[in-house]
Amino acid sequence: MLRSWWMAVLMPVVGVLVAVRAETPALAVVEFLVFTVLGVLFSPLAFPRSLPAAEAQERGARDGRPVVYWRPGCRYCLRLRLRLGRRAGRAYWVNIWRDPDGAAAVRAVTGGDETVPTVVLRDEAVVNPEPGWLRERLPS
Image (tube, rainbow, N blue to C red; front, side, top):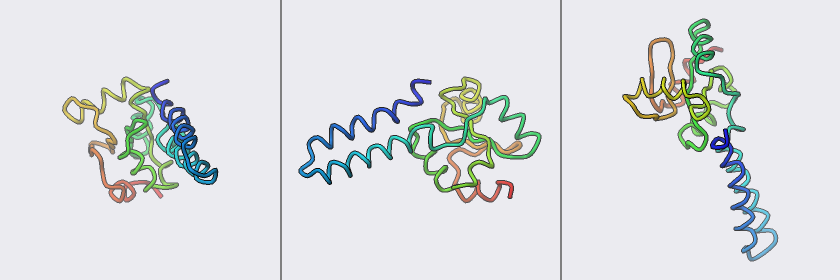
């Protein structure tokens, strides 16, 4: 769990350190805000609530929604999440750093590594899909 939140805590601290060296107070505020926003974006706060892998897989099998395996700090996961916008909540999200079964599911699909985002939809698995590909497969 601690590993999931380190970016949300570390980035504002770095923002303070950078802001202290800023030439003007306005620049200090901007730098601090930039680092704080980055911290939030790369933390679990920017993602829909994560489910345990078993629950996400069961729900996905029942209603046909995709399961997205992700981890905090992954820029490709963040890209996918941001490009999906509000539609992101139509998929089931599994944080592989919080769920060993989720990490195992990704390793089974990727040949042993934990490359994310990995999306599983029915019997199809795609590693680092284009956001448009996933958007087309999300329920309306």
